[in-house]
Length: 482
Image (cartoon, rainbow, N blue to C red; front, side, top):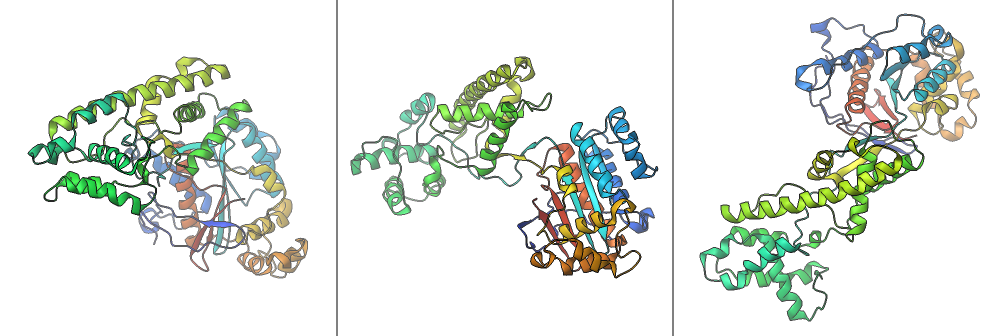
């Protein structure tokens, strides 16, 4: 029975440039006993899974799904498919191995023309693959952040913060009860100032570069206290290089900015999608401020008294609002240069992005589907074997092995340099499956495909790029980048 929630699949990355993938959100599968769905195909399980978006707990717009009962190949060849997706304003399409490779490529071209997301599901025995595709990149906030810290401008405080720091000098507070309420940012700021003076460092923004060089700074802080205090412990914990975030390299965001600029340069920004312009605005802000990251409109918790916390919170929020307005100005400049109206990007949207760690944003781009369907990839293990067998089936859309096991020899011989790619063993197993969809494989892969499709539709979590392959022989799930 498959009744998992929050299920993490343990897996082993395969050969051929694949990366391991973990499904960390609400992974669901149907309970055959309670629903009587024990004979559902992988495609139907995926479709039913997408129907779970109707659940109130998802807080999202409901999804209406329809299963096409006509012959899929005739439906595509006649042109009805192209007409159907346009008239019904389809946003996501599920294709299966019942569609011939040639017609699947034709369907993919229709989907790419109309910017429709899709998944191609292929199963043979205890092996299956779900190939995902979207013409447009999806911009998402990374669920596993590159940043586990927040820039509080301790190294180079802005004017209002500097004024507050100057008014709360820990040296003058030594021996008084007020010392234990001076925030750790202020303690480090003053300790660094003393350290620079003692060591003759002329650069008033310099930071120690090693943990050994941080020790004198820590000694200065501890010298102010007769006994341990929470703010002292917090200051010692934060004496590290992350105080300077100017040169921080956020890989996912850097790639997302490049994708955004590419869309703008190619005049290929999806209608109404303002994220690329926000990313360009964020990068312009960083370029103008020596790599500094815009402040978030929220303050992390730290030890101090209520009065100081409220005052610092107001100071940081005012600065964050000013920096969000600057990002907004840069973004609107890019937006209007593109030919769109400035009203399409309100300040409130940019402020919301900046307050929710904008530098954790990433972009997922998929390899074009139509081109791949016309030439199955080599060197991708199970994925290549499934694609090869599907292509070999021709217009009959009948997997080799469903009639005679000897078909494996014909399949292997039809693939150039198959022995060099080590594909024979994979092909043998796929052919032995004969395109059959066991309940276990259909249940797991169909549910996993629905899970990834939901991520693509909602654009709230990081979806799998290109393909997800399930190997029931070794109980592994692998993400394949094409």
